Length: 445
Ligand SMILES: Nc1nc2c(ncn2[C@@H]2O[C@H](COP(=O)(O)OP(=O)(O)O)[C@@H](O)[C@H]2O)c(=O)[nH]1
Ligand SMILES: [Mg+2]
Image 1 (cartoon, helix red, strand yellow):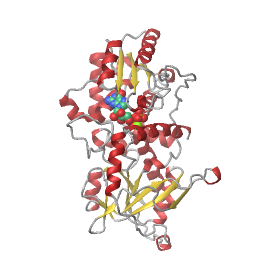
Image 2 (cartoon, protein in one colour):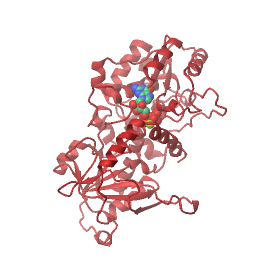
Image 3 (cartoon, rainbow, N blue to C red):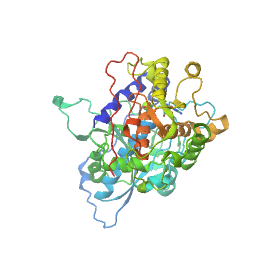
Image 4 (cartoon, helix red, strand yellow):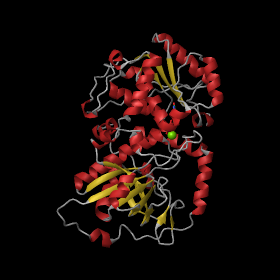
């Protein structure tokens, strides 16, 4: 729980600084003039429909996340949705989670490459995901479902009135939409909107739901108040983790194995430029995540310092907890001395100007820099994963304060069995007084 709260400032900063995203949002909002006039999904007629069939009905849960959110918060939301699907499956119907195609992410700015409608299989191992909870790609859903139709979209939102009497309680209610709806009715009466770039996709119904609580709070609504086959939760990040860092969280997290081709590229790079191999570094990975149970402290890691240096929107806000480049380099040099490492691998989203400065300050730094051809193949998401994979194999790692990109590296290192002292480290701001270090979240197997 404490951890989910920590995410809040990140989204806040992203939402405020992503001017381009803001403008885009505005344009879309203007285009959407229709207000929702939907059947009440909470109406008595729905509730009265008792399921009598013995066979479990096949049902689909789709979801999407607030557009400005980045890749790694989206990975976190997947964990929440997987948890909800597990709850739903325990209670009745045969629910399947439909993976929202990747694309249109604000940070994926490489020019001239096609980055939309990307299936999860390009970034993650589908068989690994499936060993945790039934999932299918969106295009499979279209095929199985007999067309690009989603029966019901539920747009999740907070409560307009906030917490009543300053008291937190879990609740969910159908409410009027607070924000302007991002869906509009077409001539046939279907709802059109952003469905991951699939322009033929439409929804039969759209309703707003105020929800305050953990993901499985939606289970009774999906089971009792809604009887249609496919339901999409939009703004799914509104829901919190059922149990952050509990067994179910870690099962899902461990199942999010990176696609093999990305791991192989990362491994080749480690061998070639960082003198790092799994055998020597005790980071042997099992293809089957259910059998991966490395002892804490067993991984040694390659002879390099791994760094995640988050810039862009993290420095635009002049945040106190993010260092200057000079400050960061000073810290890197001191860590290299302390741990007797003569190589440093840097993953960063720094712009060209900052990169130039960084190279001047630290001429020996190693970075993964794909050619244009490689980038077309891997896309920005694949490059980010390779960066994370290489950082995850370093003898010592230091990341950036409250970056979900860094958090996902922590988890990867925890899975590989690193000593927590080598993982839960972050840069301090140049003038930051209390520089609290990241929390160690232990795997529950
Ligand atoms: N390749 C690469 N991309 C990065 C790096 N840091 C940030 N990014 C990009 O910027 C995005 C940051 O958003 P997000 O994943 O939500 O992480 P957060 O904003 O740091 O919490 C990532 O998804 C990447 O696209 C990095 O070190 N390497
Ligand atoms: Mg982000």
